[in-house]
Structures are given as structure tokens and as C-alpha cells.
Length: 322
Image (cartoon, rainbow, N blue to C red; front, side, top):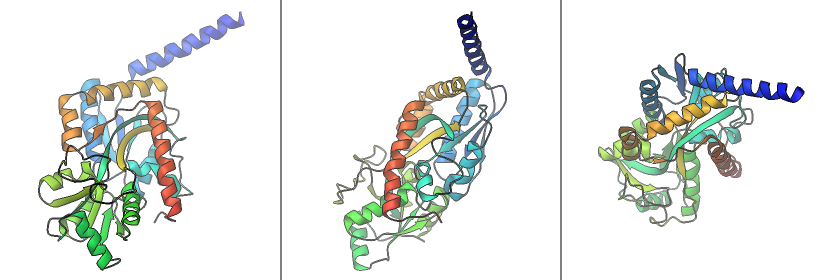
């Protein structure tokens, strides 16, 4: 008797979960972008919001909650109701929050239900068109001739771009002076204006500026050249060896406890959107992204590995949040 009742409860729970996911979304869904417009996270969130809104006949609203290198918006989602109506679009800085902030108000893994790693892209070190650097070797020569004189902007203190620039400088035997910004938008305003010597950011964030001739890409951090910038050498090709490939990444997370059927349904809809020709073209040709579309389990594993790798760089170089 008890077994039959137990099975009945399980069947009822399964039926309820499936029914819940079929009804979802029954009201507007919020996509939180924890970074300001002008970078690569905001347009990605808006692209998916538009496509999912069309597919599911519901409003998907992008809300910018910016500040503290993405922590403010991410914390908001971590503490939101796990009802399937609030999600956060993360960038690679998610992997270093905990290492940088011992008192971080959320756990980057435990407080979230992973949905997808959308894709990855190498980072590019570029310079303003008016700057004198024509190759990365010119940068290294200047840094050696005038120590502590060459500045390199990044999207935030402790961001992967910041950490990668430290590793590049160490491997090349020079110091590139980091200048942190609050996102890709402000970073590129100063890079275009010549207020900094260099900018390091994802190929996605820099592609349009390079195509427009406003930035000159000098080197990229992937193991191979990006199809978006086939003329830009890798670090190894530029003579800087001993630096493992460094990639920016973009992902989507929900608050921990969000029903798995909703996670699965959202993931499935995202995969459908990624197969649309205009979406794929935007991600690969405009943003220079290598589409990954990782499932929830693979997303959790990927984030954990990135946290371990970059957390070590933070610790080894005694980097702290500002």
C-alpha cells in the first residue's frame, strides 16, 4: 500500500512539473544584464529577449542592473524568487567574483541554477587608431624602454582581461599598467579617444571598432586566430609564449531552486534561437563568438573550472576588489 501511494505522489509531482513548464511563461520574463549598454552582454540579452518573445508569445524584458563589475545585478538574481521569471546574463567576470571578494553576497555556483554557456571568444589587445603602435612588438619595446608607462584598460578590476594582461606582461617580461573600467562601453570610449594606450576585451566587444578603423587590433589570446580577425596574430605568433589561451565567455543562470522543467524548456528555446540564421550570423560574424550552447551540467562544470583557473591567478598576484 505504502509503495503505491509513494509512486502516486511521484507521478503527481512529475505531472505537476511538466504542466508547470508547459504553462511557462505565463507572464513577462526578466533578463537581467549586470553590465551597462555598450559592451557585449547587453546586446546578447536583447537579442535573445526578442527571439524568445517571438517564439513563446510573451514579453522578455531586459533590465540593466549595473555596478561593481556585475555583482549588483547578479546578486539581485541570486536573491530573486526561483520561479522561472528572472535570469541573469553573465560574463567571464563571474568566474573571479569569489576570489576577489571574500565577502561576496552570493556563491557563484551554489546560488544559481545553470542554464547555458552561450559561447566563448578570444580576447584582443587593441590600440586607438591614432596611437603609434603598429604591432604588439612595438608595445613590448615601449614598455621595456619606459617602464610603467604603457596603460591597458579592461572591463573591470579582476576581470579576465585584467588577469590575462598580467599573465601576458609576466610572460613577455614587461609591466602593462592596468586601468579598470565599469564595463566595455566606458572602456572603449577612452580607448577610442586615446586616453589609454591599449584595451583588452573580447573579440566580440572590439570587432565593430576594429572594422570601423577606430581601433587597431594587435594580438589575440586564443590558441588560433579568430575567424573574425584572421589577420591578427595569436600571442604565440607574436612571440609571447607560456600563456595558456584565455577566452571570454557568456552564459545564462537562474536563481537556485528554479524548477528543472523550466530550465530545460528555456535551454531548448535558446538552442532553437541559436540555430536561426540571423542569430548565428550575429554571434559568429558580428560578435566573433564560438557558439557552445552547453547544457546545464556542462555549464556548471565549465564555470567551476574557470573559477579554479582564474582564482589562482588572483591569489598569486594578490589582486583585490576595488
